[in-house]
Length: 333
Image (cartoon, rainbow, N blue to C red; front, side, top):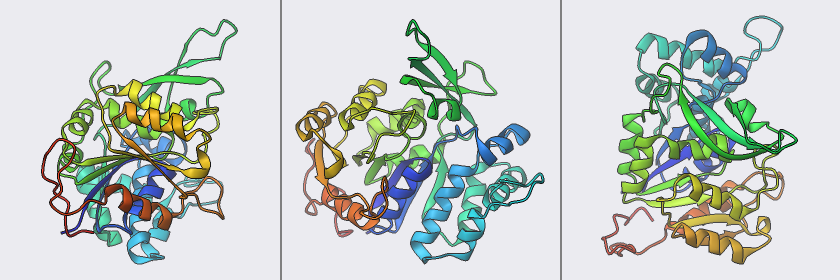
């Protein structure tokens, strides 16, 4: 039976995880952030009131390429219009998804239809079926170093200040609690392995922990939980962050969360002992390996990352996990 893997994230970080996971299993579900307010996604979100489609489109195209090599439909989905007109900068896939959202009235049904169009066996789901906003507490923007509140994914990702923590805001229900996509919750609860990261830490990774339904599912799931760290700090959002600082922030936003393994690139960790201590705070062991692409700075090598994932999850069939429960993993290896 194939390993059921669920990857939570957004953007290029999620793309790295999905590309590696498709080398390990055919049963991959991506749960994607829905707070993007920039570029084509931001324009469609503001004009039509729909989920921002960009990260969802990226996940679909990544799974299509991982399954079929260079896929024509994946290439078309990723194609952006040029020129100077109203379509300038829009990706074809963003427009297709926006049309499906409006015609079907259900983003999950729309994404399932899009995966059939692309021939994808995996699944792409939004973390919430309503667009959300990220609100961050940032220091270093004023002379007195008092915290400043900034709102919006683009603003948070590009701030010259230091992001301390984030919260999620609903658009149509001011003050309301972000509602998790039920299918995403079910995917996490039914998974054999769940992955967080890599990616923009405050705007792609941590938001999943701030949707109460998903947060609860991550605490309850019997899946092995794996965090994949970034290779380099992200300018603005996590400038100056050490690898262990990423884990401290994760713990700050979800103090009850426990994970099994933290994967990090050996060459990106200047103080392995400190990283192991930080991983231990989350109940995890640190797995250091050479997972960086030697030819592309800041990118993971998908084959090396896939091998590391196998090592992180590699247990004998029927083995018991740390709580004494029988493992559900078996012949997928």
